[in-house]
Amino acid sequence: MSIRRTPRTPVELVGAEPGPAHTIEFDGRPVPVLPGRTIAAALWADGVLAWRTTRVGGRPRGAFCGIGVCFDCLATVNGRPNQRTCLIPARPGDTVTTQEGHGRADLAV
Figure 1 (cartoon, rainbow, N blue to C red):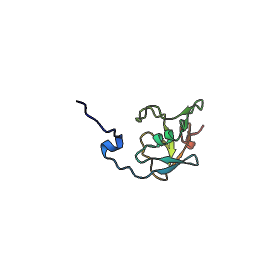
Figure 2: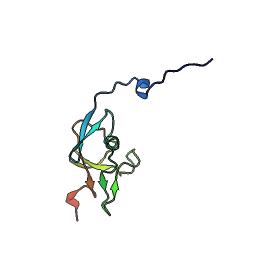
Figure 3: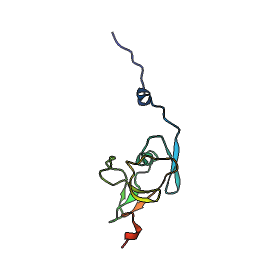
Figure 4: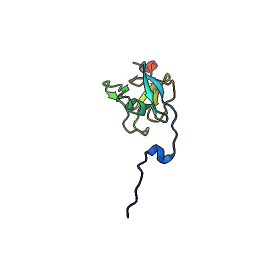
């Protein structure tokens, strides 16, 4: 005797009722965001893989660990540099810009 199961999506399994999508701005262009995503997840979903450069060598960086440990995902969010985008939920109207170096112009040599 077999049990027939109806396929269910993760959203159905948890009974979630997600709200409507919204947008954030990344380097002057709109990025669509589904509710509950972090800024890093929204950028990834939109095909953006790097949003910071290293202060030595200017190498590109994006999210690496995804849990706020490695600090590779730093960006300037709403004018505040050095924000870990993998931990920050994307809110409607957030402005994210690529961060170069350490993110503080006042410390430039």
